[in-house]
Image 1: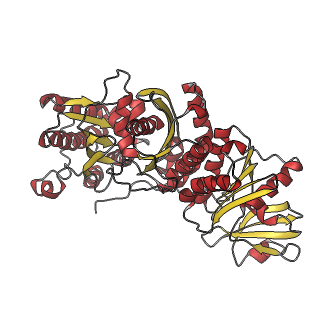
Image 2: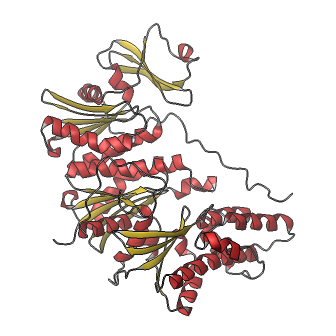
Image 3: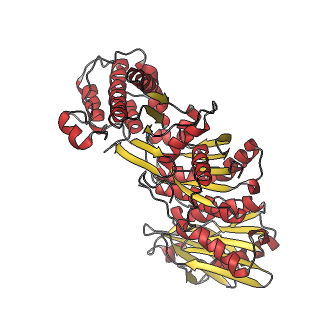
Length: 345
Length: 196
């Protein structure tokens, strides 16, 4: 068959994403974000996000169809993120995707949002398709996960994940402590440029030998956040630049160290960095540096495909179609804690 | 034919037209996302038609618990897009008031609150509004508008109500849910102290 034309819907957090792909070719990637509405609360409010998804739904689908210059009934399949994520937000996308599939008489694939982040890499404009197996480090406001991807359609293993805050969440909370706006990542990045990353030695979560026994590839950022709060409260004349730089260094150090360790232990000389926090300059730089040191090939999808988007969901859906994976049954539920082993529901 | 969808209480889907009515419904108030696709497929099959037989979509806009409510509206929007047919939104209470004289439709919207709308001959007089069990008789003139307490909403009746309103020339373009409550969130007072 010719390459499948697939529309993907993403609504797991605060981005309403609709993407359209033909096989590995990106045709449209339209995103409506409710981020501005969450800023005053310092984090994503689920009910606000879910309301915004419904408001944005029709417009984003119409815009994606225009951008791709297709007609809906040309589609070969629909894909939708079924989890993990905010249940009420996911339900908007899943309800929409089910009715669209029935109205068009097309198969529906309910897929894993996190595996979608890995799938985004097949859409790179240079056409260099992803080589497997690969280790994937997915870092966002909602997730911090280290995966071993042997097969995008059938074999994804969770090596570790955060036990408390996601890395992006830690950036948001520390930004608040420092009086910086939401979302914290870009602002910490900005002020950290003038700071000394070695000025304050903040803790590296779950890196002590005793932690490595059971949590070798897990993360924890809650203690780091508290350490920053304590430092800020008990220090006179706090240098915001130094705190930001030192905090960012701790996060980047732990993330990259564990990712590189996983590549070395599993003998997989490839690392994919995905999720919105991949936009962080220091995390990108340190990952590149450490990968180069160990001869690991680093892949980072373009930023518009790193943050949550529908194109990555479409890409994973197209891959499942091409691999002959059967579609989902129409009665699937959203799963806010869907494990990465479940690539398709 | 009209495809009608309501998820303001349980999940109800109906296909109505040409003297035929097919309806699929469950009273389960926590499985809208699971049922919606299956029910649309079922009413099409029960009528022996394909999706292109649908010439318009009607969705119930609530009031009702938000998470489920959105599932039906989202489904209605995309079904209409997929078939390139018009979509109309009406209050879910309209379905209960069909073929009744004067009445007050009352539904449970959780958190110990009730939603009400008063009707005369199927036409809304006032509401929807929020009240409580204890305040209902104060907020609504139940002698003029006898209470009709509804725990389910029929999509087939929703279609009938929509047809009546279209005939009257009402504008049913808005698809904004009748939330009646702002999102439950208040800005924090800044970070809390962690040192003594």
